Image (cartoon, rainbow, N blue to C red; front, side, top):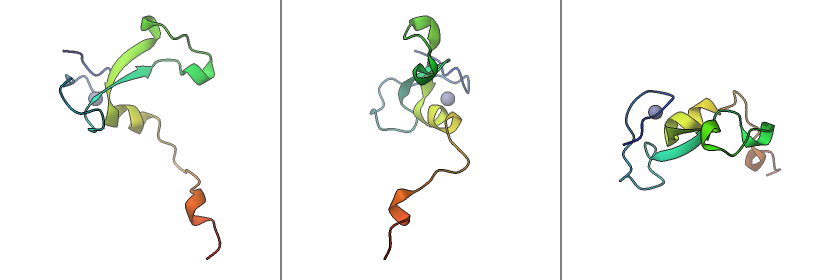
Amino acid sequence: MPWCWLCGKPINLNLPWNDRMSFTVDHVVPLSRGGPATLDNSRSAHRSCNSSKGNRPHKPDLKTSREW
Ligand SMILES: [Zn+2]
């Protein structure tokens, strides 16, 4: 069973892919920033841990910017 490198807890591989505690692969150096797509640059993480790390304080929401 893989372990989450962000919170240190085990990851259940039997959970559905869209479960917030499901298995995801996180890249130490993001591919968008030139990180290699190698196992050495990859870490297993929960979906929720992975997404919370990448959260931005302010995300523009285009859906609310349209005129009513
Ligand atoms: Zn985690």
